[in-house]
Image (cartoon, rainbow, N blue to C red; front, side, top):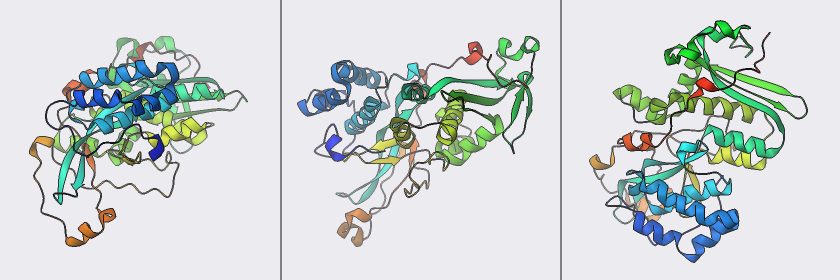
Length: 353
């Protein structure tokens, strides 16, 4: 869900990204403006100053975010602020992720690769919003190891786990190669209970279908996307998000979060999906079109394309869309993500049969 123009925290005089040097000086200047401070105070109250300081800290610690436009950074942060979620990715609630986006420059009439910041919900963020709704009595999630799974019916969705976990050794040994699936469940205050299990193969097929960067990683044998570098956390997010959107009670914030996840917000506060096309099971607006086309080049290798036909100049609204891809140099960004260690998660309230 895009926030309206009136809720846009800042307006740039131009759309030029901070592709050279650092965007920190401009970012600090924009965050220090009265209009921006007023916007964050409107949604965060007394916590606004601490939150805006965290924006600078997050960007300062990531070389790729320093190259993103300040407007996209503030736009992504503002969305997180509306949910009152921290943007420190180490905490696992939400994150600001750098992506390359192909933009058509109306002045030069050329396609350009523009580093932009994307708002991304993380699985703890969805859980936090569910807890706040007051509708959920219990909730849990976990990876599932091979020696813990008794049976799984992909047609009915029914899953059974072993009854004697004392005989299961793979979780204690931390054998990541033995992970066969991902599981989440909830129980509402009304007593209604539902769970969802997805095998590793099902999650991988989901990632291939909806993540352009993951497909590119597989084609080029690279590891630049979050699906490649932190598969477990992305898999848990997928299961939790799908479970809640299909069978849970969705508060207004939860509905917004499902729509806002992995969007880039422009100067008008309008959101557009970048790397991941929304899963139809999770999308809340069936009339919204989102396209993923050809893969774009890294920032350093971008070549300008010929000018577009004259009719594009006459109809700026008809500028064709172009997809985004993750910045290839992702090493430093991925270091910022604390690896989720689920070996210690409680696994004691599963639907044993």
